[in-house]
Length: 281
Image (tube, rainbow, N blue to C red; front, side):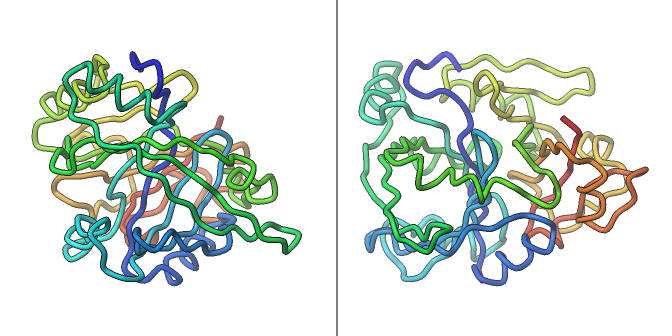
């Protein structure tokens, strides 16, 4: 990423209608899911997290309608799945200034927090500063923001980073779109980054060293990349698939209940609207 204060994909937000049922579904796929957290009242939401090495997944649900979650509620009326992605902000205020200097109408920083139950039963608080790109901008159907973690030790808890399926990182976030080149270019303009084209026609936007790539593709390319995994339930436009790295490929196959000789992954129907694929790392 060309930006100095925003350094790569931090986490993806899987927005769901029934938060506790979603957590149970992801546990059944071999993920360790954190205790439930409740955000500051103006957020009106609660979450569970699935933690990896430098990144993670967030299962997010609405507790009470607020101005802050209006866009999420509108989105959930039609679907579940990956509704937005966050990048790591080293300094949210400096990130806002940096983006605004590039002509991007960044908003923030906004402070919030949530109580965290630690493995020993004690309670702590996770605190964040976030910045947002304008809500109406959704390249490839994906809303984006950036998050500065003020208390990393309450989020990246070692006991929560161990998964039965061996998952250790997000490798790629793949987005369905009718015009992959245009969507990648639009996202690149927001991140001050230049996309490249893969041999199969997909357009790739790196987000930072050691962090996941954003990939823009059409349905035919997505199907070719994930043979044997149904595309039913995926949106026409929007984030469709997560490719995760696993340190235990056979363990991932066992956890997902699939053959190690095939594509180790599951369709969106089993993972709250997300096609999930594992690759050995």
